[in-house]
Image (cartoon, rainbow, N blue to C red):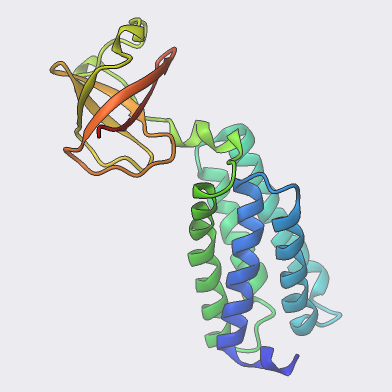
Length: 209
């Protein structure tokens, strides 16, 4: 595995491994993505780690991953996940043979982690991240209706998006603003939409055809 001496191959290995590990966190694949990601990352670590630093580096990496999962399940505000990401980047960069190599594998992680979200377009997503993505604040000062209002009469109505949806945002229906979700579809601002369902104050919209 001497090819891992080259920084570009280290970048590719870490990118693919991270992509599958975070893919396992975001979508339900019965552990297949997780297994692929672990095997790939094991190849990276086994080649670069020495007996003296292996324990610390692996612990940093695993603690970071645990914090990210904990944030997705419990706190859902992104703060703990940010600490976890930092620890995982350190765990990857510390065993790198030089500074350039360390920077490249850190960049591979930072790019691959959010890129894993694309798996949700193909595979069933895990519900643990919904609380994090549905945190728009509804207030009368910002023009929203009260959260205690019954939204069920909105089903079937059409309107326009007032912000981009990634996948949450704001829609205007009958001159009023509402927070809504496009259920994993990315929508542009000022796009025609239709409300297809309401669950409490969770409004789901789709593009109007």
